[in-house]
Image (cartoon, rainbow, N blue to C red; front, side):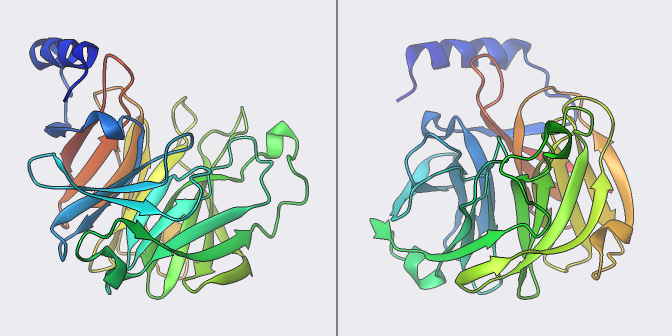
Length: 283
């Protein structure tokens, strides 16, 4: 049931909120007001979603009507869950690598086996992929070198690709690309390259995804999405790209490909705006 204040805001938004080039698909349940990751699971006929830090370690499955049809407790702490991705076998990965202060030495990715997602189990024990960044020597480093927060990753060809979120005041659009194995263990991530989204505010990277064909990549910021095509798979940032700017201002936290021409994007609920799942058309 919606809380009274939430209902009032929704009534106001239905008549006054213009989301511009984002098409609202559904208002997300209040249990997901801090949504930080989404992943489409065709096998289980849901969109998996998680909240970020400060929330319970719960994995939610949303059906086509926007209702929560599955709720699974993950036997791990939600230190700062920031993104989701799935591999072709149906294994789900939760990025527990949020690191706002750049001070954490315990970064990890939780791997949920495909078989564990079937039949709506109450709890699931994940495998844990622990890692560190090869170029971080201080915890935290100087403010000008705080590029070790992370809210974005995806699976591609037996590897996980991570895109960092800059906390440097003068380089908010800087993102470093790293790669990791998909098996449990302790690793040092492999650095690949660096990209700068833009010099404006709200340029930091909040989510990423790659399409099923592996020829398009999307990197989300709060004010735009960068779509890379004709991918150079040895270094995604050396590919062609186009920036799409959003006409609607909100805290956008999650992106995933529905297909080659449509993205799904989710934002957090901030009291008077957001808390929705949108579709966004790309060329």
